[in-house]
Length: 192
Image 1 (cartoon, rainbow, N blue to C red):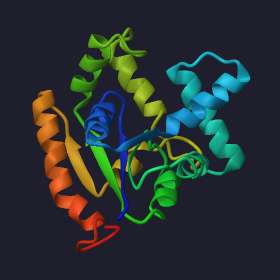
Image 2: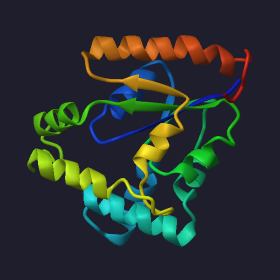
Image 3: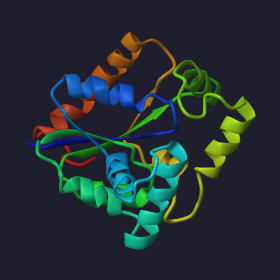
Image 4: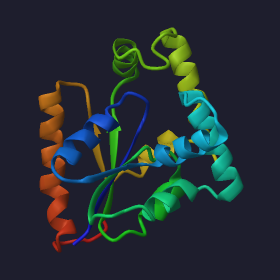
């Protein structure tokens, strides 16, 4: 039976770390951002966080808010996959059409996420904490073709709060798998 794990959450919450843990367990890894990166490469544009956001919003406006998820569904080659960078409710709606899909929210307090951005020298880590929060607010709109991270987190079937060590995050992922993987393998509820 199929088991597709979608990951949503704010910048530096730990989505990629959760995806890495699942990939190490044999899950195929796909990212909605890959479709945007492909578009930016096609345009010959630099791949930055701002460019990804802008191009993603443009693609959603032009082709519909679910376009990134629709494209990724066509790339699935396994019946066990983790799909990262879900940032719009219509992307969730599209992915929920997959039998065995579960949406996991990955969250952490803003100060923790900012400290991670600074420590990793990621784009945004060079700005002040106040600027980090302001930029995050601009990325969390009600525009149906833009990012709506709070709305996505509100739709999560399972929430992982990532404030501890990597070992604690791995344990949280194991708890999630214990709860949901059996359902995807033919247990109680195929698509909670």
